Length: 193
Picture: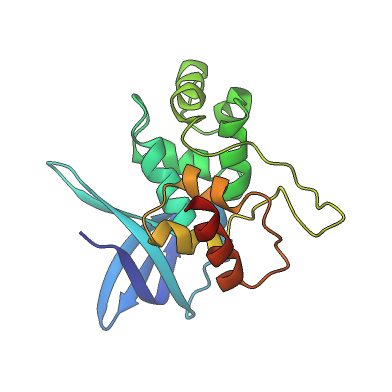
């Protein structure tokens, strides 16, 4: 299994990039946001999902571990394959997609190419309890935010420690975003014990 690809982006086409890793080019399919941010001749690291079928093998890439975990949840839903999951992730940043699922916003999901109303409803029904609570984007007087950004290093650290996306999101709720990543992770771990 290929867990991540780190190298230089040498080509961009369609919704894919070719990443040169010490002379070997890996074609990686990306969500729209990651594709737009990828620059030819610049270094990049993508967490990857290696999809193996009888006739082909494909790599789907993500700039954050959170996006990869959300992709893996999406493809567990009946009727959602890797391409549809990538289309859903292309609707916005990872946090807006996660928040739409958590708040049962199937209308948001239907905007994805190739995703109909029934599939979108199935996504929110199957995953709303697995992606954490819907969160607001405000900060109270104590610097404690209900908003957890999609590139939150503390969230990624907890997931690397084995937390699910849902559990990691819950563990970080109410912890000030003004703290360092290590302090936020420490507080989240203490609150779980």
